[in-house]
Length: 191
View (tube, rainbow, N blue to C red):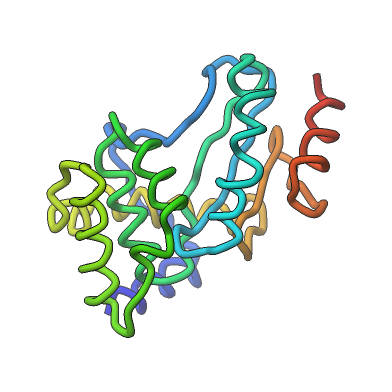
């Protein structure tokens, strides 16, 4: 049923209301010269590879130096990713840590033939990783659900996002192959 709602929201381009209490998952200084928006789906293996292979070097060279900030936005490709996004978004004080953990350990929880199996694996993974989350409350939180859906709607509407990961640098879509070398070259041109 939630799949149908997700498709309806996206197809018709509705924007949902979000409460100001739901914060973006951001890494870097708020006033950084360069803003990267990363549209991602938590079940996407290419997104997990970005977090393993590109993000650590990006963080070291550009984010930790104050030149770049990155906003992680949700673009769930399936219900499992939708639920994981709601969980990652649920605890704002630990959201980046949860997001990173879910990507780096994706194979531990993205398994099962039904959404109930994947949800159980996700819940079990979070407990074993030491995250104190009320799982049911997070995935049933309407405010967070609207926030996640709104990210996807805005990504499609404003940047023509249709795959993950999609990188936007200072409001321009990054069109090259997503590896650190190409990203670094593009960022250096903006500094």
